[in-house]
Image 1 (cartoon, rainbow, N blue to C red):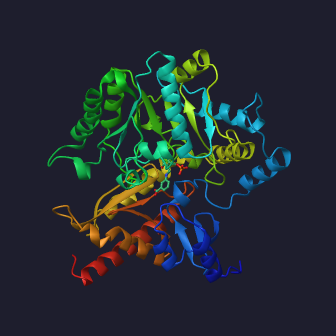
Image 2: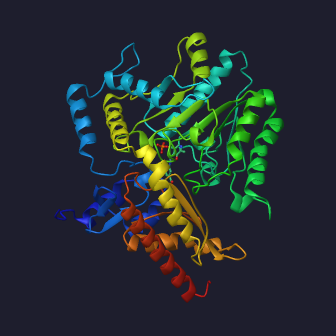
Image 3: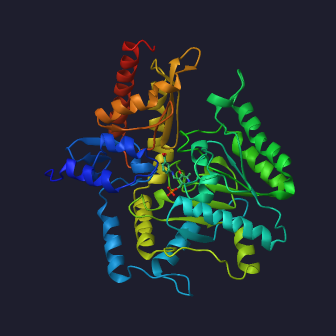
Length: 464
Ligand code: PXG
């Protein structure tokens, strides 16, 4: 396809008018944003004609890959039929009702408890705001209005609206805008590299990390705690995969104190970990499940919450009017695209493929990266993966933060046609679920090349 975009012109418009999310505006304006012009399969192209293998699926969302005509057709047809109608005043639409039923059928029941209801939004952030509203309403309706506190984790990410940013455990976010809002508090994350004791086994660490929840419940007062929220695997925090003992112990603790459990699966649902919903993989029983991103493969904004039966029953039977919702709750075009996206995933068996084929294949390839002198803890879970860049493999010594080693590695990735994300000194990927074995080989070869180039640059500067 000919390159018809004038890069300098778009960059000038961009720096003059577009305030980007999570961006140092001056810094970006000095560099000029990379202009992404098109995409196909697992590749994106910039305005200079460079092709990049997108190992981040956009931002953890383009599960079925780029260029799926079926999704464009679904949007087009729905726009012609019914582009918009609200669902506030006793009306519904065909895609929203159909998708709600489909999601209910995809969410596995645990111990007889399922998810027969869905509350729609447009994003993960809004969905988590809805969670806060639903959790508080639930306890009010049960005559326990003092249960207000929601416990979350440091370095967790739950979005960027006021409530979602408060649930998030990112200190940089809290420092701007007087966050967290009241009645949200945090515990430490189950990140063994940072928080395990010397010689402590992963299983023992998982139990100890879950124990921080019980300690916090006791500190706050068990009768004041409303819910605990966590990502099955922490995504934006750097692909932090908890030990196998962690989630079952969290479940035991929330059961013991009778508090609600929110599984934020904005990244982990829709096949990313080899299951439609990730709570199934880790064997816990959430009351609310946040979703977004993968539900439409990012082709159009859609988010929502799977509302578990015990919460739904109270909201429906005792609730009266629930004074909460969005103009675009149950947007017909977004829901039609989601249905088409799920149809592709079912037809191509993508969820099972992650579980039994490409997930294990990626795990095998990734474990070999542990041989690299710069790498520690290369590990995968389903189709996400992370590794730590270390100064000394034997001792586990990390680099001085000021060296921004992750960003250095990311620079080499971009220059060599690979999109990989750096979170501090962790390099992470979440590739499209349609990758072939040959494409996985190619991606891992590119990762190795970029690790080598990073190593050489650090060596030349005397840092290793
Ligand atoms: N929960 C989780 C677990 C997420 O990963 C959100 C909520 C918020 O979703 P919205 O749609 O409001 O953005 C997310 C979003 C990153 C990065 O740097 C990750 C996200 C968003 C932006 C950047 O990895 N995840």
